[in-house]
Image (tube, rainbow, N blue to C red; front, side, top):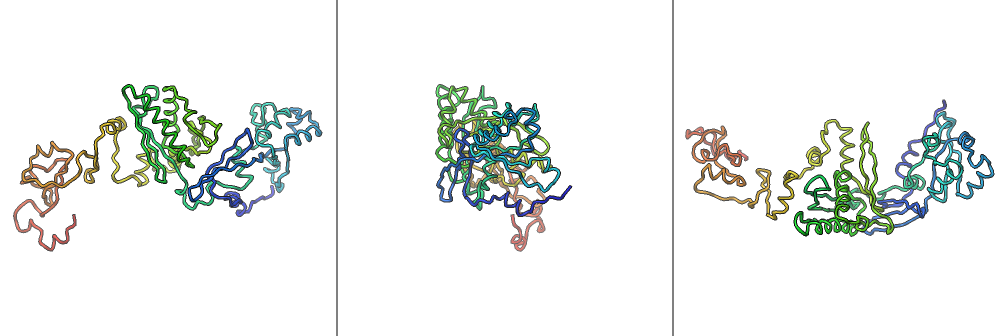
Length: 439
């Protein structure tokens, strides 16, 4: 077997793309027109769309055996030649250096200047009636083909996001639903939060009971899709959105008798929102999920990235958002986690809450410092949202004075002001020691 190597420079050129066109954030293929739609986001925020025809291609093996087996175009060279002209087909032999795996492999490049569908039609018309993906007759083993958008990237050398120095420069739209339960058949959406990395932020809330519950939920879903259309982001993202949020929205629209296609505008007038079952590879496993598609947008579920990271990092025990934030040390210091069944109640009571830096919890009363002449243990217990401070000692011992009323309570903190709980000289700090103490 002869040695066949590809220079590393050639590999890098392929991966990085040899075309210098910048600021492409999304690509879509329209099979009806055979046009690739290029969506760009320029540094000044301008968003543009350009189109160009796709020159489709695939790689294939020697088809002589299949031609005879399926009587491809009557196995007549003239008919095959005429069909190639009709469908815009060109076939080129690829360099293989007599490498065994390449010699018996996909050593021909077939291109079609009439598009992806016409390329496939060429084979169906010739006698491969089930197409080149036919597994029952092993036809699929003779071809290697990429999705149309990937064909475009490979053939043109263009790449997404080229020109961006920082991924944060690309506009991303993230959203999250809050619902009254997990089953969209019996539960409702009561809050939709939307935010971009460019300053856009909005909340849409709904009533969950009464005569206006249906109308306000429909209005919130409509406003959610209107927000997407207003922002026109490059990326729409949620966390566990493929398996929960998007499914909930689709089901609630169905339950409420609303046509989701009329609410969700894509970046192509005659293209509708759709969803399709897909799989994702995670280490040695695969998982099923439902992919939502909106023409012109990259709709992603961020949990897939966490699951991929979890597949290669054995110390990462969960892909839940709360755990991932803590694990990566990006959780906000003033973040309070509320149980799912309590979020709605907290939101609807319309009270002001304040974060208590000492307890790490929210409280209804704005934190402030109050001095008291008299304190009792009952008062401390009756005010769990307040934090009480008393003079303590280094040994954390003694029940005299203030400590007698506060020591041991969850909302009481002792600040050492002396060494021991007694009145001897060595129980107190000297002036020099006090200057060295840092609380």
